[in-house]
View 1 (cartoon, one colour):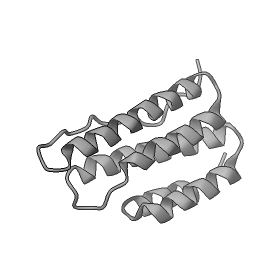
View 2: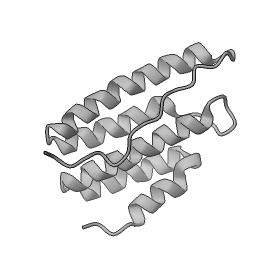
View 3: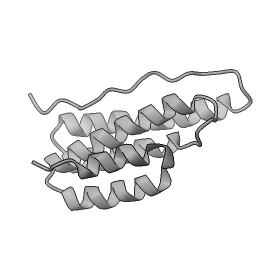
View 4: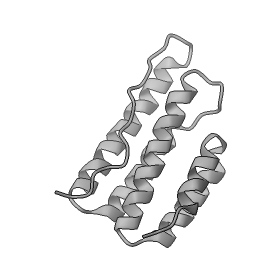
Length: 123
């Protein structure tokens, strides 16, 4: 049995606001990529998993205060944590630092969470 994922994602709210259809499409894109990441992770292809976990966070980017922003932000945090774990298992810590540093700059809502990942000791 391989290394378990650090965190699992929450479900997605659908909502009835004007942007709910567009948000649902982004959520579906993210979920598809996330499933690819999980499959790579479970197969021991940690480098691919790390890249896919990070890619899965991208469709979920939105500003604080937007509909469902808190759940979307949580799911991005899960993606970041799992990506960092996978980069560490792949022994590609420097690549992970660069990629998560860029994600921190794109995601002010989760910047402190990403920084805490990067600041934690690497085993």
